[in-house]
Length: 563
Image (cartoon, rainbow, N blue to C red):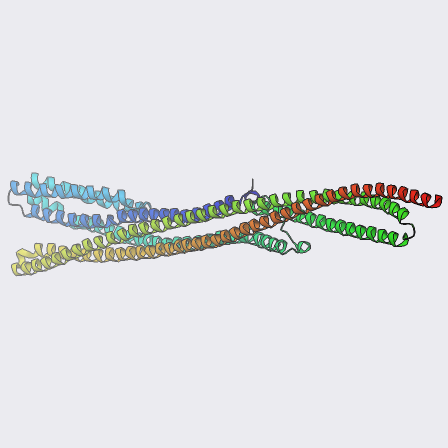
């Protein structure tokens, strides 16, 4: 069964209201799915961004390894060398664990670059492990020969260069993926807004078109036809086509009513013609009787007899006419009663249409409720994205804290450099360490600045998502307002349907009065028939008395002749 073959208007508009609700629900679901995917993407970006602190920790571990190595170079005895060697091994274990954790969180496209850095990592860890063993077993001079040379420094520098390359490549990947995430969020929000608006406009246009074609136009034509019938202009009635819905059933009942009214009008015209003919026959009979009396002055008795005979014949004709009129009047009464029943059927169908319109109003109210629930879902999505913005703000606070610590570290390194300069030749080694710590603090500050810029991009994307969700909420709110307008229009149609029912009830009252008048007319015809019967009896009596008078006059004339 197709949508346009449904028999009731209520069923059609229930489907249209359901479509409107599904459009609103679909928009909410798409928005929820978009937010979920964006949250997953941001979570992946946060995991990848966690690789940058790992790189910085590895750099710190490298410098700690260097400091422990220099402690081995200067160790006075085996116990002191053992202490520096233990610290060196611990830092090497930290370096190894951080490197493995970094390999796990790096994007797939950077794994090849990490494979290129792997030999430098292995060389650095192996050489420093041997340094710890030699420093304990053979003393500081052997440790100095093994570690304090260009080969060792080149291995450390190669390790640092590899970490720098990974850091730069990771920064580029994060920048690219962040920009792509923001752009995808903007495109998705715009597409969702446009799709929702187009779908809502199309559904509302379909609803308005169906209301106009299946309810407004047929009801307008039906109202005009009933008004024309009420005014008595039956030959000017134009009824809408008969259909299967409520309006079609009312049109069918109105068509039957129109046919019955036409038949009643025809029968009424025939009854009037018969009454006029009977009246003309009665006048003609009276005239002929008067002419007969006037022409029969010389033979009053013979004329009286002939007049009585003529009167008897005329009463037979009049009796037949009265009986025919009574039959016609009974048919008119039956037609009027049937027409009254049809008008009552029209009134009942109009009341049924009114109930269907009320059901339509309820369905539209349900669609408005669904649209309001969609608005509430949009608000909850807005709150969720706002929470994402707050999380980004908290991450920014942590980044600022790290930047502050880096600044303090830089200051401490500067103080250490000054103290090493004061110490002279003995403080040169510590001056190198302080310089490296200062470089590490500068790199940390630079990394925190880049992280802050990424957090700001995330916050901007979240703000754009919030605006898009609010825009969708506004569109769904407009859908709610339009649904309420439709409910008001359907309420007006209900009022028009009630007016049709009232007009049909008034028409039923008119047909009832016509039926009553026909009953009175039937009674008059029956009374006329009774009077004709009495007239026939009287004419027979007059003829008998005429015969008796004629015999009496003959006897009188015979007696006169005899005399």
